[in-house]
Amino acid sequence: MAELTQEEIAEIKDHFDFFDNNGNGLLEENEFIKLFKVLAPDASREMAIRGFHTIDEDGNGTVEFDEFLDWWQMNWTVF
Image (cartoon, rainbow, N blue to C red; front, side):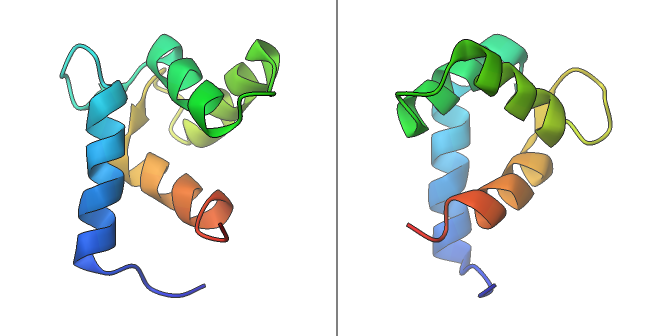
């Protein structure tokens, strides 16, 4: 997998921040579901919830940017 540039990381952070509705620097489950439905409109809510819990590596109930970035690189950089 190719290393992301700082510009690419900043763009991904902008996407993350757009869906962080309360501005706390974290994606909560409902915020992630909205983002997931934009990326995969045909996906079910259940798929989005499973994805959220998979990405939440530390199990704290939120997705931090570093968790999100790791997931993004593994799943969306192929597009």
